[in-house]
Image (cartoon, one colour):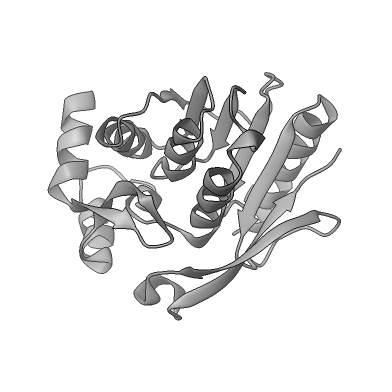
Length: 212
């Protein structure tokens, strides 16, 4: 099954540098709309192909840890809802170890593994819903996770619990509808995005710190 998923990822993407993080190359959709349609028609219902795009929140987080590697170097990192694995790969490049890329979509994890290998770094993938778990990580990173009320309602308590256990918890967000209040601003970037998906070529994106 892993081989089939990897074949699907490679058949529907091209490897290219990430616009705002050119140190990292990802397998990205050459035609976003065509990939969305291909995913929807590939047998049983599939989650949207979030794994095939470098979303603004992930690009901002990746840029942030590469520019300040002391945030993650030598520390365990969880990249929650990893998508393409961009943030996990960037963390590994910045010296984090071990790095865990987590998602509930097996195609996402196939993409994350392919991207880690293509960038010459080691990332462990975990397919599971971790939002009720309490495992400890030195750093928890989450890009673009506040896009729905349901997701935000589950993610925020998980992130606050992690912060309460001593983790550094950072999120990247381009002003999604359900971004919570009370976060600490760490950095702001103007991130190039896919206009077909975001209805604009640049999104101002903030890296926030979550506290307990």
